[in-house]
Length: 268
Image (cartoon, rainbow, N blue to C red):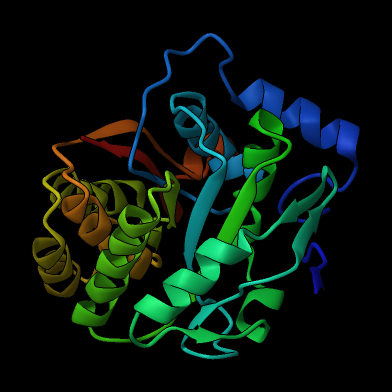
């Protein structure tokens, strides 16, 4: 199955040359790179969140495969879905799914189901792919979309991913795709995002859930982040670092209603 690009020409340029140049301007070819277990990367239009995503991907060592976990914005398809075969198309070409790894994760993770519908129009995974292609044209992916479930379910998926990688002796970087606070004034968005980011940097998924509930933080990708934290802890994570934070007002100049973007790396 070929998954056609759904938001090319909207969230990012639809022409290969323009896309390559835009990513070049948002990345740093001279940045020091380190091995990571995973990253948190935003998923808005590149003009808004691209500099944060670019900063994150510029600072990590690339593996052959990236496991991309995103939230389900459209509410279609299976609640917890993975696609285990085929390729994803972007203006930069096709990216193959790492079928062996994807099938192994599906077998190990309770609740995950094979499903392509949840992925067909979901932008939160798609917008990560051009960055991966830019740095590694032959990269492979494992796409996972998470909808509403208990935090323990997300944690179980994360632990299953870690166990699968260990049993296969395979390296892969996990990308948790998430924007932060949505459509609030700059001051309140920044304060809420700081609380959520602190919990992520502490690798404390329970505290992240508590703060999201207590302070009404509209972080759309908290589920992927919970899975990432669980996988990272199983893998021996010892350090999380905020690479870059900004919000949509830094691009538009309108700080009355912003969306926040955080780029975070997690390593041993």
